[in-house]
Image 1 (cartoon, rainbow, N blue to C red):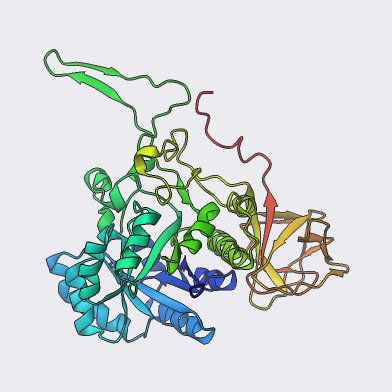
Image 2 (cartoon, one colour):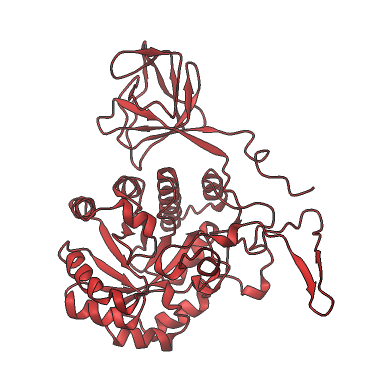
Length: 434
């Protein structure tokens, strides 16, 4: 058996970096500034907090990979050089880049840091992989459109080259994100990190005839919809066993630096569970899909790794662009473990599921504040008899707008989350005419 596969999670900010590690990630990726392909998340990190994240990761034996995978203009190259030097001084575990020119810059300015090739480079075969390997790339993040057989072929030709693949997250309707719709319509360039997600919009379709200037609206059949570019989210949890059994993949990657702390937690938790279950001989795809359905999503597809694109007919969501999930996150335990911050709403007497970091030790308690208890389903729950703030004020209920820490009945691990089932989540989706 090959060495245990790496689980790589998104780190959109320092909080989500810590959450990803707490819930199972072996490494995270993130960036600072507009040279990353997620400008919004890049702005959530400062150089100081990013350095703090790298130091935090190294102290617990984890890794941080820095995204410098934008496509720079000529006018940005001098700024890019300074950025590479600044990032290299932080001593990250790798630099993720997308172009040959930036690879050369990184080798010159940060010679001791491994280079990972971004999925934006669209590597689909061993010929291209070898070119980048000869340039000094130690790992390629394969194109999302690649098949597992092609991954195996690359590994056979280049056994020392690490291969990373995406297994979960948003999908682009264009080939590996090479899209200009957002740039044309909104002036926001996807390949420089500012995609406006125009593909998620509902479009009204028209037919025109220039000879006699006719124009008429095309009516869609009920249930077909006009979200014509809207891709479902990738979800390969059910195929983790095939991926690991191939022996060709070194790292599986989750998309989502701009997504919620709960998304960072549940995806890391579920894919780590799938990895561990595979090695223990207890793989159960149904269990993983149940957990992942609690996240906000646009519907799931297993994408192209195990099927050819022309074999797929379930990759698009024609009905709605909003993300939906079967659970709401109602609270997050703060660092001292004695209080939580409300993220949704909590009432006296509510039964709330506890979702704790991996290998957490939870003690059952019952006192004047409330109870923490384990049920027959093997899960822990919390219920409040009194809702009391850190300052001692008692409330009838607490909602997400309240920024006061709320007293817990007993101590819980830092970054533990509370979640409640939303029985109407499917009813909340926009009607598609059925």
